[in-house]
Length: 133
Image 1 (cartoon, helix red, strand yellow):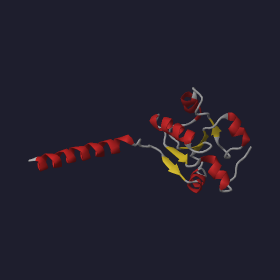
Image 2 (spheres, helix red, strand yellow):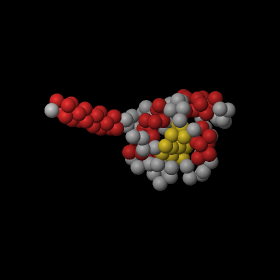
Image 3 (cartoon, one colour):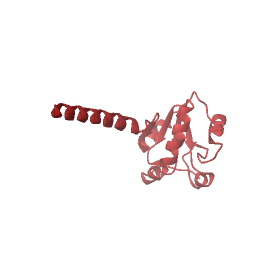
Image 4 (cartoon, one colour):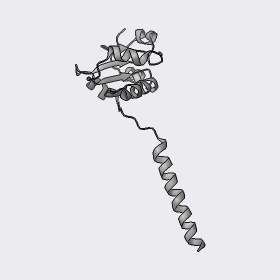
């Protein structure tokens, strides 16, 4: 009898662990793109390119044609609604990818289709891709 209860407890623990493991990782509703994929995407005129860094960072160098909305600004969400069109995809980037993931998460919850530049503009520059000042 002890063996059956041991197997039962093992099964219960394993099932609970599986539920916890599956639910603990946040699901991203946006797609992370490599620098090459991102560059290809923003060639499409329908795609809006968003720089989620500060205005100072943006003025030091940014991807041509991008709009700057600082994700750390308390008015980010309202500014995004004022400057972006919900029916057009948004390609978002920042310095390293952390802030742009935050921006992408906010935008996807608001109904935007979002693509994120994985590893940010630092990786973009390291790969020799162009920025403007």
